[in-house]
Image 1: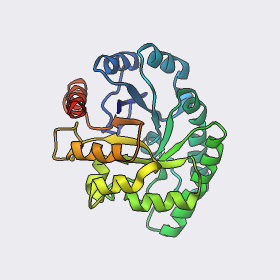
Image 2: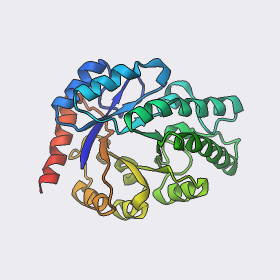
Image 3: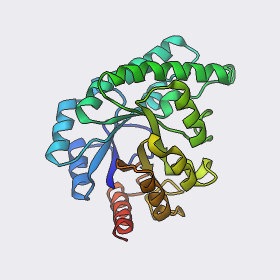
Length: 270
């Protein structure tokens, strides 16, 4: 399996991104650590030099397997479930703006926090309806560019809807788009899934991308998750994409990333 790690293209509050800051330096560091790719967290594609970033990745021999969109929620409050229709429209437009760069990179677009956290005044059924409409619009546009979208189940302490793999699969089925799949994240799965391995097998060929972090959201090996068993289950589904590190940098981003990839490479060697 190929391994990537998350890199924010701009300053962000979200803590579970290993690398922030100097883009060129970080991409070269990720290459030197032995990663095969770099997953980009992008708040707004209009605010980055897309060609420069892609050129840097190519020069370093790194793929860009996925684009994270959650900073549009975290930094700007955009979401598919905001009570304000204009905010919902802006969230959809922001998602659509990722498609051209995703097409250039061959990247999956991840939708996790961008679903939003709807207030108690909004009925759950209404929020799901808004989400379904948003995903339908975005998937239809992305299909024209052969771009896939990955929905991420997120634990109950961070969002108030669609936490588990089973719930995610049912939602994807309701949207009915063949270019909509799932991003599975071991940190969230450790909280929500009765059995991580069984849930991975249940998701099967709907897995479009995969995030790794240990039980404490640090690098693999720093917590109690059985990554040998987890990766065996992922491999059994026929998944051939990237596994991507979205974990907290601890006190030293480079050292944490190094410990994580060395741990995983050791498992692969076994």
